[in-house]
Image (cartoon, rainbow, N blue to C red; front, side, top):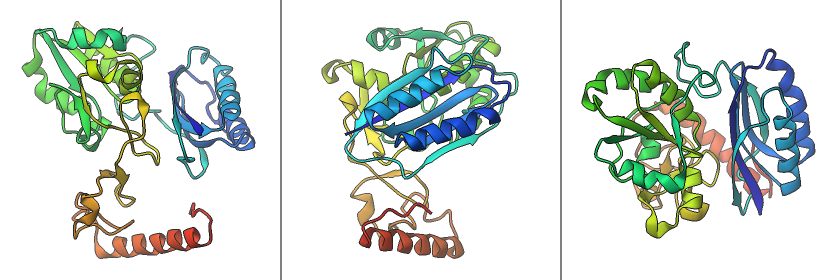
Length: 299
């Protein structure tokens, strides 16, 4: 079994570029794969590897300036869920596109998973899912508002258009691991919302801690690796991934005429032209050839 660690921390880095190469080298030496984003505002990523390798990488990150309180949620995978290790420099570790947003200044009140059900059952609380539409489609909390956003960058515009609906309400928000809610809660506080709450540790921590018989979560939680989704207890779900659009699909979806492995599914068939589908077919051909050779295509 491989240990999978989803991590993030907001802290100012004076020279994020200087942090990239040492982290990349250590992860590769320890057999750890995944993606880590570094920006002036902090660090974010998901990595997988042997227990000792994950411990070494996490210890290294916690030794970076201001990262001793690094947030990390762990689960497991029967197979390595990543093809390579990538440490990338970004403008933001989660893209919202709002220059004034700073989670290190203020965020909403954290709510532990054990207290979440009681909070969202209150009549004066509105529950908002801050994730993308394709994530919400396979699972969310009972009664949650779906902003139907294609990316987190669209959240501020959605809020501006819908804020009057929630006037006088306390706002509770959630996301996969907690990072998007750090920014979303700071943004809402800046917009004058007085009572803002977010789920500590995100959906992943809730599914790990709250027994299924007491849960108000319905469906699967999308994760950004080859497991595609997880369920209660962080068990691997039954979804597959369309490698053309990176959205989750079911086995029934794979029987549709619009599905072509690595090329299209019913969700993206109308989003690409024939030239791009031709490139996707060539890529899938290389993947299939690598599989026949007993290797993994990582191009």
